[in-house]
Every structure is written in C-alpha cells, then in structure tokens.
Image 1 (tube, one colour):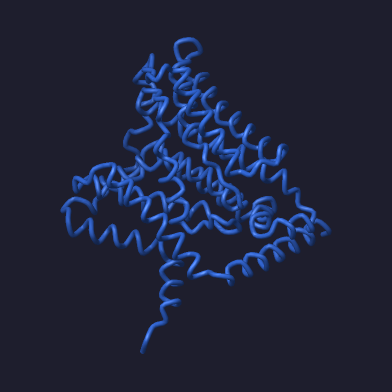
Image 2 (tube, rainbow, N blue to C red):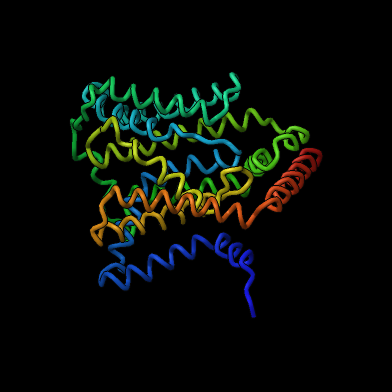
Length: 337
C-alpha cells in the first residue's frame, strides 16, 4: 500500500507539535542519561516563560491576520524601565511602569495600523527600529543593575517540583487566553476577522476595534516578558529582547497558528514554546553554540511554513472563508437571540 505524499504532509503538519516533542524526547533520552527528568522539565518550563509571553501576545495578532515585529524592542524597553526606575519609584511601581511601557507601545502600533492605515508589517518594523534605538539611547548602551537584586529571585524558585512562579504565570496566562479565544463571542469574532475580513465586516463585527485590541494585548504581553526577565535576572538590559522575535514566531507556528490568520490556539502556542524550549535545552546540553541554535530555529520556521502551505493549498483558504462565514452567522444569531 503506497502512501500519498500529500497525505503524509497533512499528517505531519497537523501533528507537528507532537512529532517535534516526540523527536526531541527520543533524541534527548538517547544522547543524555538525565534529559528525561523532572529537573529538566522544570528548567524547560522556567526558561520558556519569557519567550512564552512574547508568543502568547503574537497568537491573537496572527489569528487576526496581522504581524507584530516590535515585541522584542518593546520587551527591551520594559525590562530597562523596570530596573532603572527602581531607585526612584520602588520595585513594584517600577514593574508597573514596565507593563505600562508595553501597553503604550501597543497603543502606538494600533494607531499606526488602524488609524493611519499602515500595514502591520511596515508599522511594527518601524516601531521595532524606534524602540530598539530608544532603549540604547536612554541606557547609553549599558544595562541597569537592580537596586534590590533579591526582590525578583522568587520568580525562579522551585514550585510543585516541575514549576516555578514565572512558569506558572505563563501557563495561567495561556489558559486564560484559551478561555477567551474559544469560549467567548469576542474570541470567536477574532477568528472571523482573520479568516475573512470582508465577511467579518458584513457580519457587523468591529474589525478595527479587534485589530487595535490585539496590538495593545501584544504590547502588554511583551511588557510582561520584559518585567519578568528583568526581575528574574536583576538586570535591565536594553537588548534583552533583541534575539527573541524569531523564537517567539517559531513557537507560535509550531503550535499550528497560521501566519495568514484565522487559526490558532494559546494552548497550542504553549506546547510550541515547550517544544522549542526542549530543543534549545537539548542543544545546550550537547554543546551546540547559540548561533547554531538560531540556524536550527530559522530552518524549522521555514520548513513548517512551507509544509503548511503545501499541505493546505487553496483548500486551506476556502476552509478559512467558510469558517469565517460560520462564525459570522453565529455572531449574528447570538446578537438576535
């Protein structure tokens, strides 16, 4: 019995998260005696939390058919503000300022895309450059050291054997986002926006409002990533998020979210973050340099996007349009009931 290549491609794309997790587990167990342990799992979850918040912010952005390239520079600004303002404002107020920096940056992106009608790719590329430059300018290119280095260390403490407080925050945020996306009318409307914007507009959905909202949410998540990273390390680096954009996008894509919009899940993103974190941990245990790991990440991203498009093709576009129409119909029925 011969297997159709297209069928194999569809299976690989559909179950890519499980395939990657299984491959990493098998290779890790084969090459390292202590890889398949609770200690390793705790390390993976803890280290994945920062990238995880960036990936969570990207998930509704991509579901809506948009992109946010500025999350890394937003994270850097938030991380530096969190630490640099501690002597003047105190630890907790400075952390809230860091979150505020993320929200403000998200508002700027939303205004550029919704009000000034700049495409999200161009708008967030511009804010990426502006944010990265501002972080270096304000800091003079030097990281800030915490006035109270012990304050945030609890975020990486042992919690229930396989967790840490910051990994709990990440997992909790993923669960909350899942409930919103899958269990509320506004979450379902977001899928309609990403599947077919004209159909969503015809159904009376406030498309601009949803797009603006996901950019603000993305900014908040990037700010949270910066605050968590800064407090955990007791350092506010102006380049903290400069290399985390591609891993965040890759984690979201591993989880099955489409770059074209209309499909995605925060729980699948959580799985993608864990899978990528496991691969990174395995690479480090085997002595693979960080720049080589970046090559692997880029290749995985290209491969997954290519397989997704080959397996989906025009059928994927039609399916998304039909799904958008179905969601729009449910929205209309909900509004008249």
